[in-house]
Image (tube, rainbow, N blue to C red; front, side, top):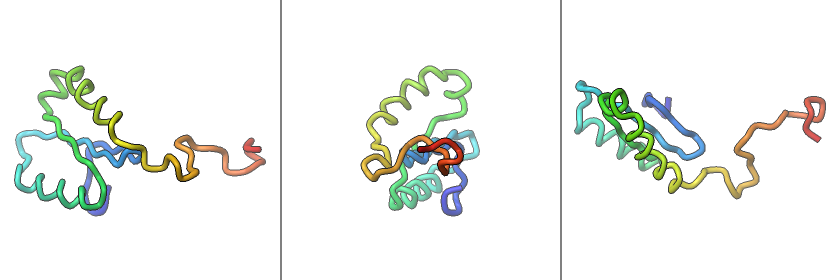
Length: 93
């Protein structure tokens, strides 16, 4: 969940939301939701269920440059993008 929205898929490192839309999605509601999330710094990309089920290679081909062009949130702030053990007892020296 992001705020009170439920995302189909979410990449926290990129603040990227991936939505899979079926026949029941309302275009106007989706646009308003995306705009509210964009104001908070999130980017939403949408793919149809049909594309995911029938053209996964195309979906991944479209998604890759979006991931590459979207900056990481935590780089340059001293934070690691991979988890470390929490103490010396657990192996971090």
